[in-house]
Length: 353
Image (cartoon, rainbow, N blue to C red; front, top):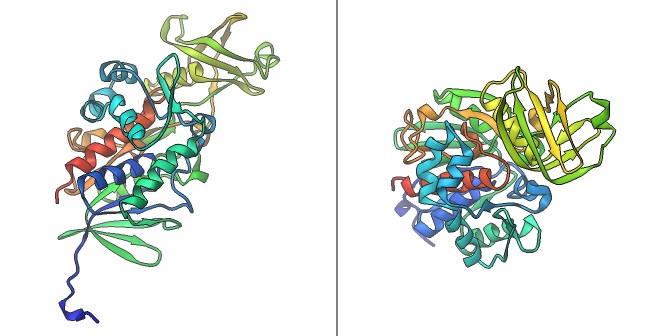
């Protein structure tokens, strides 16, 4: 039996709070770096929201250049995530999955999916990586607080605490709360003195009372387009992509990206011009669907208080952020997972040992 007097207490080098896209990629990056880490996940399984993405197919990145990706993301987000995406571009993300046995299907527009069409295959890649690297994973284990101390942080749960040298908050946004994205990471940041930008729906559908449009409920146009119009019908944004007609209004990639533009640019009122092979319609004063249904959360930890070259807090040394907990967002189509993966990678590469 070992002499317990000879044992010394050491902090875990990195505590990762959140077992979603950013947290899982961070754990894989820590394993490749040889950096000891521990992952906390509030739900019973990892990657709950990943399993939902792209209707369960998981469009995990897009096969385009970093320049094109950043141009599509737009400002002010592009300038912040630029260092992360240049350090971990889409080609590197795809190569990493392929090297770990994931067969990939490329769509004509560059979107990348598991060849099986099953998001579970992406989650299994992460699960295998954590198992093979002996990375401890604590599920059913919501973090209740993060306290900076002299030699790191105390990460608290309902039943125990962990001493960590570095902490990465990768808890996501506040959409689809049943997947575990409940805004707790933003609360942790706020308690440690950070400014948190208001959380809003970033990519979601629009409601309309237009009977002519709602009468087409169920129609789906893959080769559609939508444009955001301001008061004088001037077009300020356009995106080509899928358009779907719902019982309550309109959805699909073209619509989602227009609503993102409107919210990010503070358009309180706008119109939507919808173009499909079967006709063109204008939706006057659409109502954006609620945050809980949004693909991505807009808002989060203020970018002014995080170093874009490291993802480290400018206020609390050793504290890092990645993914949707930050005030970052991109178009639909693989951009947001790319942001999550790239910011997580940069944070882990920047951790001080």
